[in-house]
Image: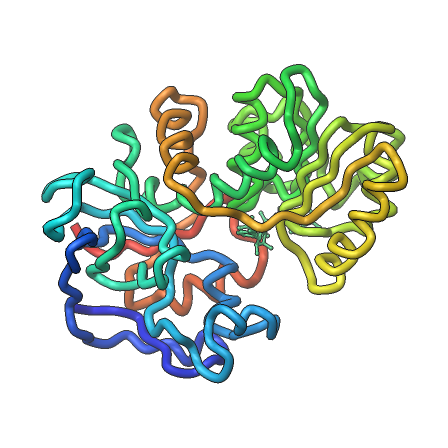
Length: 324
Ligand SMILES: NC(=O)c1ccc[n+]([C@@H]2O[C@H](COP(=O)([O-])OP(=O)(O)OC[C@H]3O[C@@H](n4cnc5c(N)ncnc54)[C@H](OP(=O)(O)O)[C@@H]3O)[C@@H](O)[C@H]2O)c1
């Protein structure tokens, strides 16, 4: 089968488009013919092996898993003898970071609990854009942010892969949502349901006197001190990404602020799981969430897709189309 392969850490130039052996499903596995995958900043991180701590699970000296890619959608081609939940022909989607990556390929063999039936109203390209980014946003708002109906919620980085889901998920929980993005993305933010938009190139929301019950920051973008000003006295800040400095600040200072005051501040790590995939499938089928796709690349151009994502200005998700 065709796949994108890397055998050493480095820039996206280390990725090779080549032929590898097609996998066969073990007893508890499902063989999926992948139709589409998503290119994410997380894929760039595992290809580079940077920041270094990522290597404690991706392989210390060289990558443990040779085919990158975590978010994917496709059709079940075959199932192992112990598989109970799927049969050939089922359309599925999933986050392969729980089972060794491998979405940048024509086929993957995965444990049945890593995937779920794909939302019936989405194309494979749209479904591939969901599994991790949407679940990060969901867990950030619901589990870490304890979002409540009527709350004032601000999403910083609202036009990116995580943020475009966060806006829609926050709306589905009944929040009043403010989206922060750049000028060219204001209309997209409004179109996915944001009640208010702030153009970060013209206005700094941490300086305008407004306060929010919950802030989800897709990346850091500001210091914790800035975010504290924009939080209500009992507000919650959840960061999903950012520079090493921002992540460490949230990891070290966040718990101290949370213990010594009434505001809560933390950075989160997604916990991929089937229940949340199914939760997102239902929200999508109910018409409450729609993936925002910036652009699609063929599998052979996956390195280019990752370079585009790495530049940090994708509007929604970037998808790799693999086959019909
Ligand atoms: N915690 C976890 O478990 C977990 C899991 C997955 C991903 N992540 C992390 O989540 C973060 C977000 O991922 P993502 O897919 O949404 O991609 P991203 O590259 O962070 O987001 C791109 C968006 O950020 C916007 N942006 C850039 N600078 C900004 C600024 N100063 N203020 C506000 N928005 C700005 C861009 O909008 P403009 O083009 O309008 O500037 C673009 O739409 C990444 O750091 C990723 O590593 C974390």
